[in-house]
Image 1 (cartoon, rainbow, N blue to C red):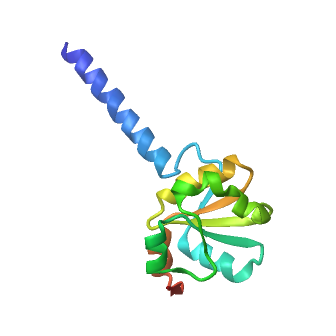
Image 2: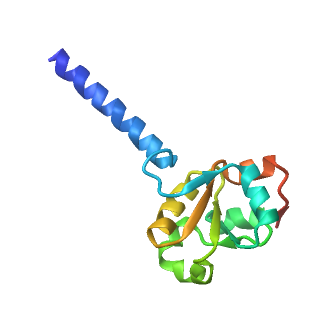
Length: 134
């Protein structure tokens, strides 16, 4: 019996590691994740980029990057038409810490967009002194 308990334990541990890696976008991701510094450089140098905030309305109102479009993650799939004009552009996707933006990037990629997930979200973007507006 102890042998089976050990096997189940290790299966569960591997499952948790796979799940965590998936939610972070480290595995099975058909999109690129970028650092806050890379996002900053792209926004300065590339005119073919759209900025998408997938946080809640309340979070957005408390401070966001200038020119960011707000489509909360929970509403993204039903509002992809709002990004149709940006389909040919790279879409820099951010949330608070980089978790919701992974989910959003998966949705966007699945629907033919080119998302770039910001690894540490707005927390990382503030760390490279990106301007936050209210």
